[in-house]
Length: 189
Image 1 (cartoon, one colour):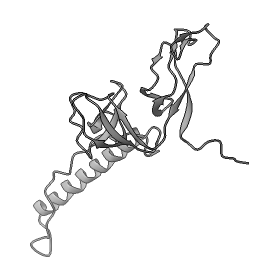
Image 2 (cartoon, rainbow, N blue to C red; image 1 turned 90 degrees about the vertical axis):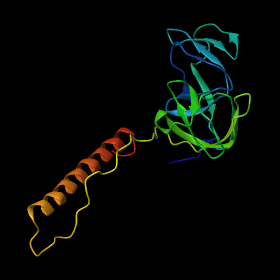
Image 3 (cartoon, rainbow, N blue to C red; image 1 turned 180 degrees about the vertical axis):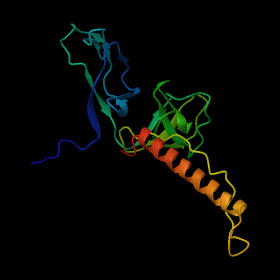
Image 4 (cartoon, rainbow, N blue to C red; image 1 turned 90 degrees about the horizontal axis):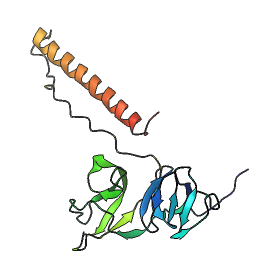
């Protein structure tokens, strides 16, 4: 049996111990990136001690919040100030700095800039549909070995043969490196 449980515009996620989340900020929790609909603070035991700016008795509120994950255009100042954020730039979430960046290797792809960074350090971007745990894989350098060439005669020389073997071995190494990177990025089992 199956049934629709939501329109996929929001999701409830667990909040870990010793965490403070500000309402309206982007956060990555349970592998999902979105805007916190509530503000919350948890203590070392994982109990909620503040909810939407109000103190609460520990254990009274579940340590979870709702994230807005709707595919839409958003405005944010939660960005890496060093990045230009030109219109059309790809946007990534840097979980280490808790902000958006245009540096692909720093995080999870999440959209495209629609309005350039203004004087106040604010951008608009089109938030891409969620693809949990989808990360850009590590860079694998291009094959550097010389291209093989047709043999000069009926029988290839040792030098001609060695060029082809070198190229084949480097291709094998690069293919294996791509497979390792795809697996590490969670794109392949």
